[in-house]
Image (cartoon, rainbow, N blue to C red; front, side):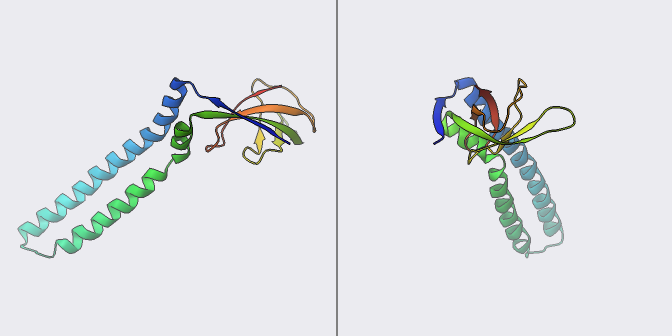
Length: 149
């Protein structure tokens, strides 16, 4: 049976994860809003000067496209926000099931975990198949952080 523990995150690390989600979101929303406003302004300007009243047929699909892309932007790096909300780092005892030797000598190790499938230890250490090791990772991002013997 694999041993899983949840370790509370430090506030600084939680803030770092929150910003890893919010930075791309803010940038994407800002660029999308500016682009949509520019397109809408140009459409309204052209419609006013040509006395076209069918501008609604232009603005309505533009609004729906804006909302659709906005929803897609919210999904980018959402796993970091979920880990921020969880507030814990997972510590799991796993068994090394397979060793992949690389020409550079830095091996890749496959693990028995359901969440994190492989890792490259940092600081570097050589393991063999069947060795047990504690691995720290983010639950939703499935991002390897550290290991412990």
